[in-house]
Image (cartoon, rainbow, N blue to C red; front, side, top):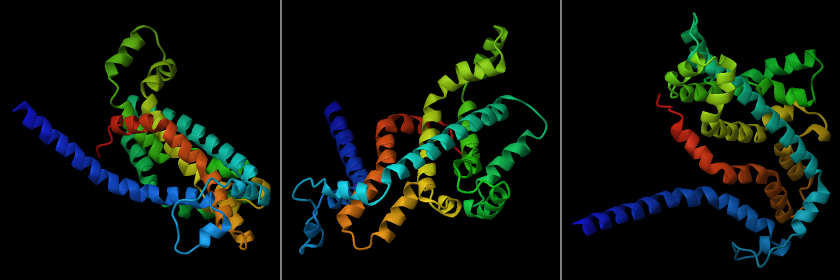
Length: 280
């Protein structure tokens, strides 16, 4: 009887794996194809019938991509902007989520509803007022213009608010009896206990900031301030005669930081999502 049960359980796992494997392959196909093309020579890319895998690892495309455009500068700009936005959103979200989940004050529900309501507003709606505000402050084409408008996140506040609600209040009351202040409890207890949720939101914020295209396209005016996503579009438009292998090599270098970040922290990301307590 036990063997029959184990066989059924094994079959269910196999079928579940096969079902999940199909969408995973669909999602991974563009990235794998991009890497394969980036390693191909010019003649391999246009040969017929086409071949999926390259004959060998051709690193010349990467060398040409680095010499054709300031890709390193684009990567540094994106790294500075994405890291700054992530740290600011973590800081503001932690403070706001802690206040909303632990403190009691008049209009608390209205404040929470207003924060959740900001998640319903498309980001494109705020582009014009943000642009005119920064133009009035002479802040265009600066790192401040790329960072400050995204220093807070309604999603981050709501996400951490849900996680903070799962931490027992008895722990906080015991800390207060020992003379612990609110800020000390927040930084010494709440943040370490919320590390999976903070990691998950940090990854989400970093990837979102790294992938921004429309706002940096509008706010930046010089190559020295442009980010990776703008670099990909500029690289393609200014090098129309260049082979697809070089273009794919440049794209691979510009998207590699986010891919490597997710691979390195995927366990914490999944753990943070599953433990966040977001149930509607």
